[in-house]
Image (cartoon, rainbow, N blue to C red):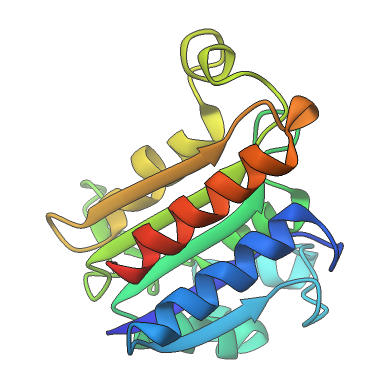
Length: 196
């Protein structure tokens, strides 16, 4: 399977970086072809500038500034996002990636009659969301309604293949994590992605 990994954390020594390394190793060990994009290491600019915004609805033209990222989306059978949850959502660089890369004509199609948008990434059959957050799991799920997860499961998932399988893994309470809790989570990530 062709799997595109999108990683969004600026620190190479972070726990998220360890998760990222575990993901890539597990996928490659399982025989998948992996395109791994570390947004920070690649110097991705999350800013949707005036010119890009003006060209946003001009299919084809809108892809030019982010062609390599668009090509990776179209190439993939599956996506894996690895990121920390900050302020109950995705980091700014990942939000900028979604703004600039998940474009009309790429991620979705806008019908001229004003009807419902149509999915553009029907090649994507599997989606994995792997994150960390400082809050306890129950706070994220019941009080905050897990907004970071919702971006992917409610916002992006409908743009993919019908029946796209979703995997969500989160290490909660990172502020109180221990070496053992982190070890267990990495083992869970490894096991899950080895079977992805």
